[in-house]
Length: 205
Image 1 (tube, helix red, strand yellow):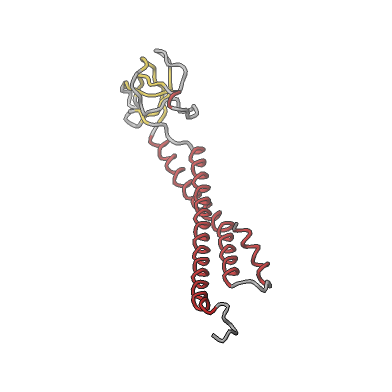
Image 2: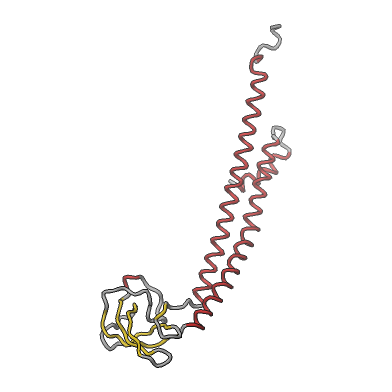
């Protein structure tokens, strides 16, 4: 719709029946198309770049604060844990994870026991799973990796660009709607002025 309105600029320029509002609608469409083609991608790139910087710094901060360690499975647990084991494995659905009670050693050498969730198929007692812990040896959620940060940033940029395009189209439609409403109002006023005398020209009445 926007492209058709833009192409109408050339068609309307020398058309004798062209109204000022027709040209205005085409110019509004052209402005909207320029925003969609130029401003939206720039906005998306800016949002994506800023998001990437923040997420990468966050990921690096998490990796500085947390450390991976090996835990030994004691037994499976009916209680779910929000701390995921096996950081090297791809993130899977919650149904594919198993909560286990495991033993591990804190950085200061203190033995620890807790409930963690793992996507590993080896959850029998004595199996080894990988977990993340903080400086005190407490289990922690797997930190974000750089690849995931980049992916989220790209999605944020694309989302911002699409949002800008959608908002621009909504604004264009609203402006055109107001133009059409104004045109109808002017036609109503003109008809109200000449309507009562319509068809009476030359009758002497």
